[in-house]
Image (cartoon, rainbow, N blue to C red; front, side):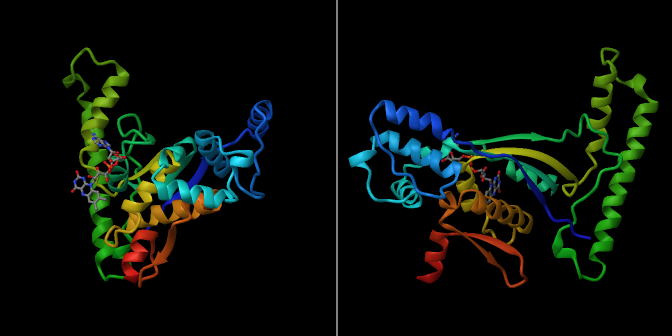
Length: 264
Ligand SMILES: Cc1cc2nc3c(=O)[nH]c(=O)nc-3n(C[C@H](O)[C@H](O)[C@H](O)COP(=O)(O)OP(=O)(O)OC[C@H]3O[C@@H](n4cnc5c(N)ncnc54)[C@H](O)[C@@H]3O)c2cc1C
């Protein structure tokens, strides 16, 4: 059966409004806040307003969302880097995570190690494209089962011949060496677990370039799950993204600029 990615929010932005208001008060600034704005949205607004000291008479009638839209429109997106989320991603493949960890800026990763973790009971993520195609799930299952069997055989054989490793290796390093060699047969489909922290600017960029690629189903699934979380956590920061469906019902993230090009 195809597996769907599972994404949990482990940490989210907090905004210490009391401290900020204390500062504003000491400097005789007044801030008209938007009722209902979330912590992440207010922190971005507060940081943005510090740039121009746009408080009191200098504050335009813009709401929090309008203020953030304007930052994005102006390209003043560094302000969005002040807010980050931490996600735990499960049920994703190593193929997916390899693409994910290419994102170097504004992302941090902690991923299950195949050198430390015994993968004898590894699970695998079946691409949903195979579902319903006669023979395809069976071909896939027999291939991944064979790799798992090979992993177990290699692990056992290497442990029986531990003397072939350099004497300098202690137990921990011997395990690492054995698992490094054995994992070489595991496929891209091997399930991984990864903790991902990213700021709003980096997440927006990720959604923009990764979320809409029609042929990349797993990436679209993850991007859509992220967008749905983020749209509820901080809608103003992701105002220009939409969740769409391809004709098979699978999700796709579209950015306003894609939508405009579709309309033109
Ligand atoms: C459709 C698609 C196809 C792809 N195909 C391939 C492929 O065939 N092979 C492959 O190896 N990868 C491929 N990639 C991965 C791609 O090249 C990037 O590695 C990945 O998308 C991360 O993007 P990034 O480098 O822009 O992001 P980040 O590393 O997060 O960087 C964000 C931004 O910061 C700036 N930046 C970061 N580092 C530097 C730097 N050193 N110098 C200057 N500016 C910098 C850039 O503006 C960059 O866009 C593909 C990606 C996509 C979306």
